[in-house]
Length: 503
Image 1 (cartoon, rainbow, N blue to C red):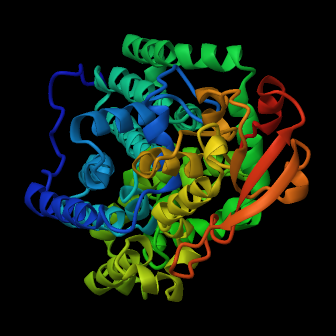
Image 2: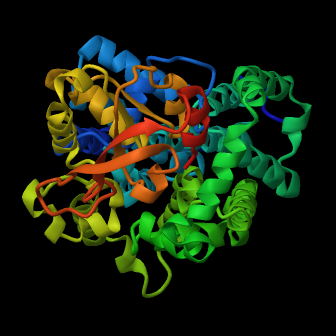
């Protein structure tokens, strides 16, 4: 039997897309995200991206260049608008809802399967939480979901354009995070194990691969010139053990995807290996297992599998639509479960509480990023108070150094209105934005260093202030000290490399 030639019969036997309800759902998600985009304040990463975008390069120690460039473009066009800064994340999340629906359609899903899949994506706690912030994860999840959709579509159609388009999506993703390399390798391995293997004979596959490689080369050259800091970052991430490390990797898959609705993707994974209707897409099951094994082995974060979630939800939804849910499990994909999951997701992922009550809610404990969006103006105000307390002759020569890029980014954002000089930090990419000038004045050091730690760099270290977000919220900056340091033990060219660190 001959294969389709890429131009005929492509849509025969495939259900139509349920455009109206899917677009309504996507628009609803986007509207909710935009409605809450301006509440609380910047996340530390957003403050970092604002500054990093002013120092464009082919890479940074902790990431490729694209998201900082997006942050710069938004601020250049719209000014200092938190809503505008977060609008790309909201739009990508809404588009991801549509992408989830058409993924189900490519697997043969009709209206119900498409809505079950789109709904699972729309109420997924991790998806909504990242959709609230401008972050590399938001762009990476969308691009990875698109890449998996293209692989599924090609497996169904054997089309000519999908492999080349996949290369374009991979090229985009490689300039957001390098994680897509693992996803591509897992998809290729899955296709080699269970087929279809014709992609190896398609010129478009190699053309797409060439596009991805060419897009990655400038960043790889940058990494090589700077000693491959991304590899050190990967080691630091693994050592930090976020989400419970290896022990938490699988349990957090359930938490991040919505505890009850996680049943749908697990059912989909099982049916990919059992259902004859899904046999052409069995490579997705192998890719999922392989990727989970790799990230378990390397202590990756649970959300590194997020690009496959839509496909697994879709596989489960298609089987539910065709055969009904297994006995006793129908309630798990009912409208009330979706509604309750959506409500819980909003309560844990979005800034719905009055900020002065946030510390008394569960949100900071289940979504630590929420706590990191509170208190930045007060932090900068305290630094400004310490700066004003200096004798006039020292104040004009004072230098500000911070322990992390969030603190430096906050001073960059709010400090000019309070008369503060620019801040410097040795944290990640911020270390390359310029070391402090040799003014001969004191250093105001903000952050987590102890007096003993700072005494390695200065002979006179005095506590001069304390950070308080004003709402009793336990976040990374709360109760940190603002120090005044005098008597440097070495000039800045010697001190600065010693203050540089990755985390």
